[in-house]
Length: 143
Image: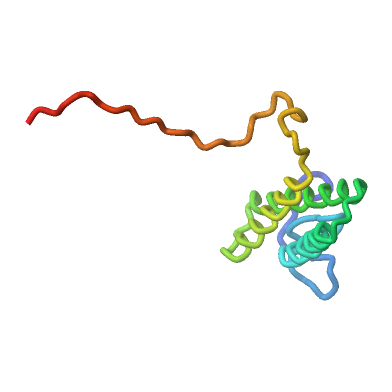
């Protein structure tokens, strides 16, 4: 963490999670709230689950759709911030962050325009698996 003049703060001055009764260090700021890793994951799951229920109900107001994509984007970016930080993560924490990242991608893809090529001219096309062609060999192997 950096102090007011950019110098590194000591570990004794590490900011604590803003959730009540939590003394763990802040991992990231999400939706203007400083959260530890566990509370960040819980908060993301709350938002993503709510978006999923909204999508299943079939109501797709464009204003809420834009808000959903923005929330999913922020979740994904903060999850990546944590992954790319110097924080040592165990396998469960890494799995939770990957799950959040993938779920955010699903939400983003669900709201992508159907005609992607017309919408994003000049952008790379989605990955297509190459087709291997085999040629018959007319050459014989001497015995």
